[in-house]
Length: 83
Image (cartoon, rainbow, N blue to C red; front, top):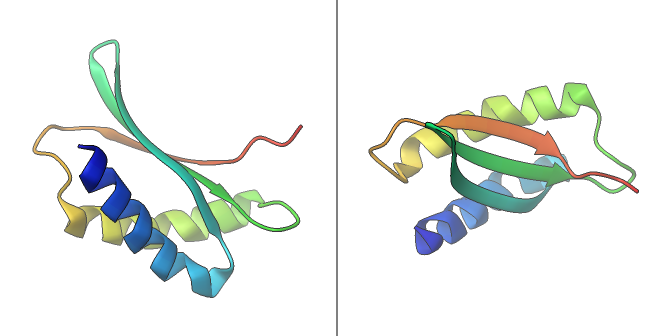
């Protein structure tokens, strides 16, 4: 799974570079009875909700093509937490 996630991260970064969005992290984990694919994004100066929504539309197409697993999962696209 790690190699699939690493490839997915590279593929996502390639398409999101045009939007100056950084793919900070990707994880796939089971929480309770659900599987979650969590993609954490960042951008210089911060990333707003409108940018997350636009990026999710792009990400969805790339993730569908990547076929990382046959299991069902919930995709969660989030912004990097700022402290």
